Amino acid sequence: MIADDNAELCKVLRRALLDEGYNVIDVDDGPAALEVILREPVDVLLADIVMPTMDGIELLEKAMPVRPDMRAIVMTGHGTPETVIGAFRNKACDFLSKPFKMDEVKEAVRKAISSECVPEIDVISAKRDWIEISVPCDLSAIWPLQKFMTELEGGLPMEKREAIGAAFREMLTNAIEHGGKSDPTKRVEIKYVRLKRAVIYSIKDPGEGFDIDKVGHAAVGNPPQEPIRHMSVREQMGLRPGGYGILLASQVIDELIYNQKHNELIFVKYLD
Image 1 (cartoon, rainbow, N blue to C red):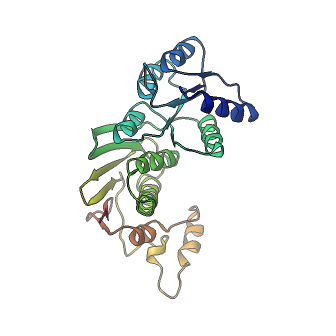
Image 2: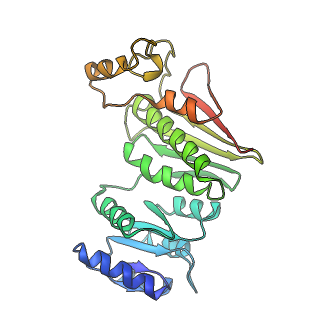
Image 3: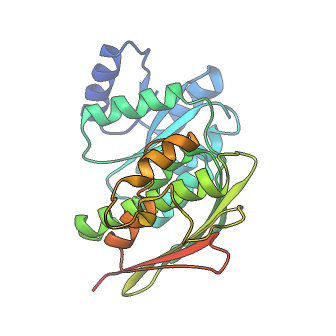
């Protein structure tokens, strides 16, 4: 179902999704969408944030308890920290910033339909300059989290947004995969702090930490004369291709430090 008061956009979205073989219902406001959801099951809801009478976040607040298995994708041209936090709280699985391409919509719906579950993201602090969340050690949480967190930095130049997003993705992947062993019963704690001149992230995993001098499966541990040695180590350990997280993050952000145990890190990107 598409809930958006822009009739022309609804028409375009409806046509694109019908061409993909979906059954599509479109409505122009939140109350109409809620009426349909109360009456019949909806697999995926694409909800605009700014709508008359009932905005998209309020719609999710009322609809998700009724249809907890429904996948929600929020659409907005006015992304704010409050919008992102509201989407977190109400189990949205994706975020589309207007203007978007139809291929992005199709991919978002495809992922929503194919996902077995929406990661349970717990919001601990919802201040716009201090966001704290807890997420399961499930790799499926990484993609929506990166999109949501990138939306927090909508006012920054694209170069800085991409650098922050890349570092966040790589560090969160390491925390989930190595610290949490991809065990969804365990959780990673994430803090986002926005200062006047810097963005700070803290990522803490539930693992035992690691010795930075003994990470043969990571690119950061390669000797200068063997820049890809970690790839064969990962293959022997049965790990997926990769291992560039720490190395990449250290090159695109300004500061990266670990605690003594090495199961918590802080990275900083300066804005000046």
